[in-house]
Length: 470
Ligand SMILES: Cc1cc2nc3c(=O)[nH]c(=O)nc-3n(C[C@H](O)[C@H](O)[C@H](O)COP(=O)(O)OP(=O)(O)OC[C@H]3O[C@@H](n4cnc5c(N)ncnc54)[C@H](O)[C@@H]3O)c2cc1C
Image 1 (spheres, rainbow, N blue to C red):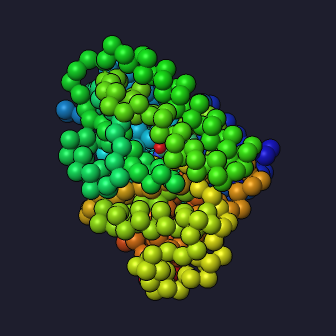
Image 2 (spheres, rainbow, N blue to C red):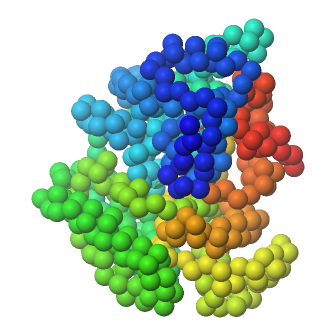
Image 3 (cartoon, protein in one colour):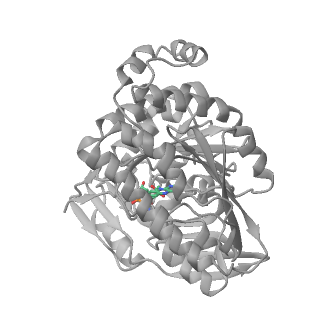
């Protein structure tokens, strides 16, 4: 049975496929397929090779129970691995609770979301809040199928974001919080310093660099004690109708139908800004405010995480590279040209010239450092900023985007320590990726201890675990 991911850039051809009903059935499947390679997937919303599997494949959608309880002064939910975030939010909301952090969509499963470090803005990634993971695997000495609870130390830090490489996650214990409201409004500025200054007042904000207009739209957000606004329902209709559908249909029209660079530039300069109502201040429930229907139209994405002290340079570099890739400029500024020469990528830049016309706002989200081994925001230092580059080109016409994504990942990882999102397009070699994570070696040790035969790996994770560490 063949399965494809959301982005239609990955095809899975497992030799056996199961949707087990409970833990007992999973243990039986593991027993039956001893010695074969076994992977689990969530809702296949990753674009990276993390989802690939060519042998036994498990989909745990039927393990979706949610139980909420208090541990001391903390709210903790025990969630079946295959439970989608949207179902989890609904269940939590019945108890006036919610998740500590959320990505832009709620289609993912809890196990899938944490396994690639899914994040939103202004908080840690979801992985950081994981308190425990129940895992099915083989015991190294007896070969018998066992269930472990990873709930402390490096095993927990590894399980918080593990790329499916430790075993089959059965359930996740995750810290929750009481439900809260978020107030938001949009403003526009040309200065990054204005955007960053606003963080003190709006810690949950995210912002968008608008291509070809080159200004920033800031989605100012903060927690709010006020009740839901009177116009909150109207605001939701506006978001769904105007932002999620009309804006995206317009982008699809330009990119897929007209295929005109001139109209894309004109649109981002003059039409897209008109979709955004500035200074309309609305308070609504966090789980409504923080998400959108970004899954409505098929697309592909690379997201690069840079530390805060690299953000300004990284954004300038991205803007200039987009101009070169779009054929609007033939070279970068003197500073950036020098950077590219310093890493010997002049010819790559020349090859990118005029090959890809960017056509989507670059969303920038702040992620607080995670207590994990390898999530993109792992480490105890600065905040990270995730820059996303999205293409709505038809799957058959993505060559330009892939060239661009590869150039961005290779140059920005060397120039700005940029880490590609594990679940999105990830065009670096295994040793380039692992070199970005100071604690990758500890992650490797946990994987080798829990899965010494490598049965829970695919080719991509095997290469990561075998990569040289500098
Ligand atoms: C439209 C769209 C919007 C997105 N928005 C965001 C966003 O705002 N922020 C963000 O950070 N990411 C975002 N993503 C990326 C997405 O959150 C991640 O790729 C996530 O991992 C997908 O979850 P999934 O349930 O589909 O898992 P899959 O993609 O199916 O799997 C992801 C990984 O989890 C592993 N896995 C899944 N279940 C298990 C299990 N039971 N046991 C062991 N391993 C398991 C798989 O092996 C794989 O390695 C978005 C993706 C899309 C398509």
